[in-house]
Image (cartoon, rainbow, N blue to C red; front, side, top):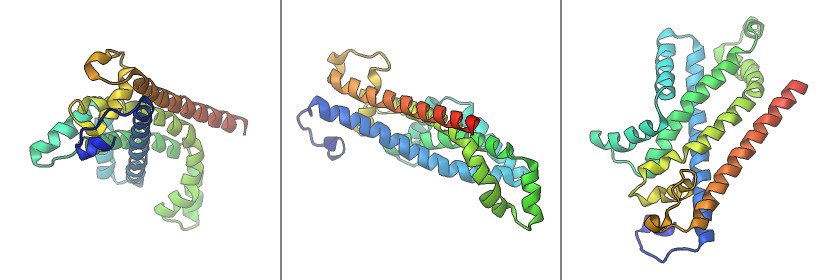
Length: 231
């Protein structure tokens, strides 16, 4: 992957190196988008539950916008739309920004449902102790909501991992995200390697990394849900 950024045309790396590169970019993009999306989602959650009607409408519109439009369209708008207003972004930044906005919208609603599942008595009891809204969320509500939020959050992280495959559509001629395209071609059924020149083992390697990550995350969410029901 060094030649993707340096612009040096080197010989093709061995299949193991391509596989590792594809898997590394998938994991890196997934973790970055999920971490940033979680941070933005937490901020939007605090705004959504604060009770200000204008801010609540604003956050609701944000959530409905990104939940109601395809991720591919969002990535295209970020990558091709921002340069129209003078903001040139690299494919990596565009993919990260698009996935972050997409992730934050869904996590905001997931976590809002978990917060609203906490009994009203918890809010009233903490208010009777003189706690303000921030203290109520930090010490009373969020610790309880976090346990409820683990299964749906882990389940949605699967969608973030799979969403990295969509990023390959903005990297047709951009080498920064080319490994994502390699690992996605097997999932898309594009196995004609005579045109892309990509080794089949590299495609399979990147796809196996993504599929194993999805299976592992689903297993974690399933186990956590069972633990809560039995606990």
